[in-house]
Length: 83
Image 1 (cartoon, helix red, strand yellow):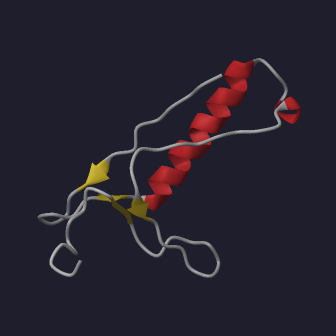
Image 2 (image 1 turned 180 degrees about the vertical axis):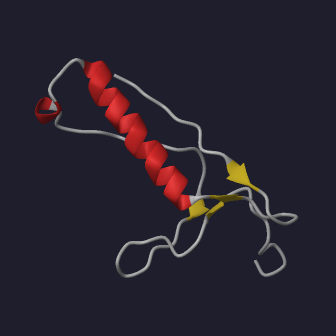
């Protein structure tokens, strides 16, 4: 089965494009839960789950795997003068 969620992006400054990491994780978990329910199979029977997204980005985590800030999407060009 398939389930999907849209996760909004924010543009807090010119040339910045970000995504809330907590919202991204919640949307992923909700889509997985829905896909399992739609499968008609007990969750224990499911052997694999895949999650995909469009584009590259920078999603930094700390040593405890917690987000260090919002995800920076590939559309973000704040570092254009450096690169």
